[in-house]
Amino acid sequence: MYYAMGHFSKFLPRDSIRVEMKLVKEEKMRYVVPLKIVSFKTPINQMVIIALNQDTNHTQIVQVKDPDHGYLTLTLLPESIQTIVYNVATTD
Image (cartoon, rainbow, N blue to C red):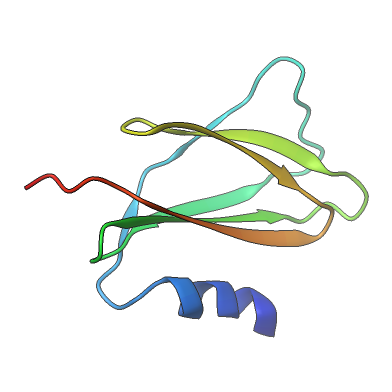
């Protein structure tokens, strides 16, 4: 639990805003257990995605769709948590 909380405290500064991010499930992709994925936009215009695979045996390959920036393909090893950070354009 300590390391999982580190993903949130290290990569999400104060005033980050949670944003919708869609998990795209293709026919060939099977999810053995529900995956947990959450995304935020930070005050410095970065997108932060935190993904958790709770399955103890299976690697999960998923695509995440960002409506403004396209798709990301993530490979989540069993019992793993990953944080992805990327820059986004400002809307000013």
